[in-house]
Length: 422
Ligand code: RNT
Ligand code: ZN
Image 1 (cartoon, rainbow, N blue to C red):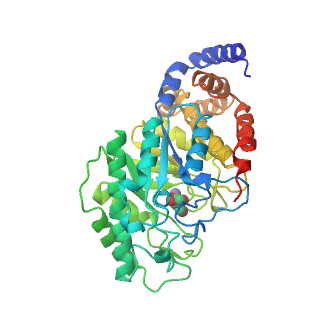
Image 2 (cartoon, protein in one colour):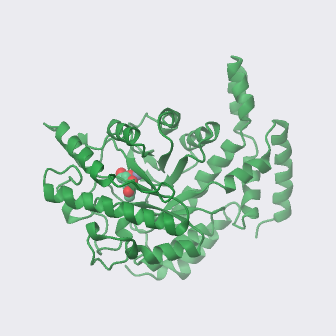
Image 3 (spheres, rainbow, N blue to C red):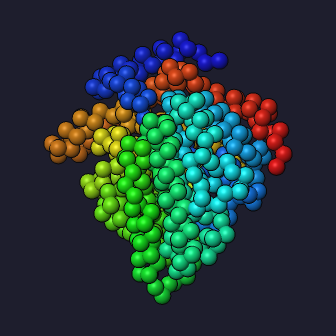
């Protein structure tokens, strides 16, 4: 049991420290509680989905590890997400992939419709959650060639165009039903392992496919379309059709959202520096917050310098209402519920730290050319008592403070996930 009085006392001391810098902690907490993070369903079963028992295949994304207890059915996955959400302060969203449809594998991807997601939508409604959605253009026989929307095989290309169209309809239905626009993201694995002879053809076909998918105008209050670029994948090291430049151009020209995945750039490039650039030309974007270790490894998000920098950019640029924050990591080597809790709590902590920044002061230093004070203040802020504000926020939202949440995950492991036989 947490010591509530201790937490309140520590908060009061922190509140005063921040007030001395001109920062209103209550205001910061208020804004944080209005910021939703989209929790990705695929962390709960290693990007398996429920179409077949084989799970993730193709597409150059890999989940490694054999931690016991992964969700085997939609009900189990929902139960796990509920558990994770009960340990995360605030109201968030669910990000679903098309392969999590409840069709017992009988409906192919190009024939999916909103009715195959009724249980998910009802569940989200019952829990007061918004939903986001993704087409699944991998783990499928028609993706085995390594090409989907850019395929030179017209039947294959058409199949995936139909899937893209179906997904937009599903996303729109989710948005309509839940009263909050569903960000529907499109990522394809298309690319070559080795040096291509034709870089242009696949990109022309991808553009054509996207034009076909996005041809129908759908109410933006229900659906927000997003396209996700990538630098390379396993098996597409030399060439990825949907590159950053390709989708940046496409998103700007067609006024849709660009999805920036933090693991999809050169290792020394950072998404924190891209946000204010792309936001000059786009109304809204989607983030896939992930953690690449040496490559696009999709490790669980931690409170890293880059995560903090991303959060700072969102707050400093006043982008919180325009940037949709989705998570995209999957680690099968640790407790999967814990992975969600760690990653999401870290995202929220980073946002809180950013909201507790004396932004006006920092900007004034910069405008005055006082870079000494700017650097000094930025470093002093690193040891300000944001932990006390975070603990207080968690108690206010009725979720465990400090590492107490882990006890609940352990208990859930013993009573629920450990009982699952694969
Ligand atoms: C893959 C992309 C993509 C996937 C999910 C499962 O590199 O990041 O977003 O991780 O769609
Ligand atoms: Zn991603």
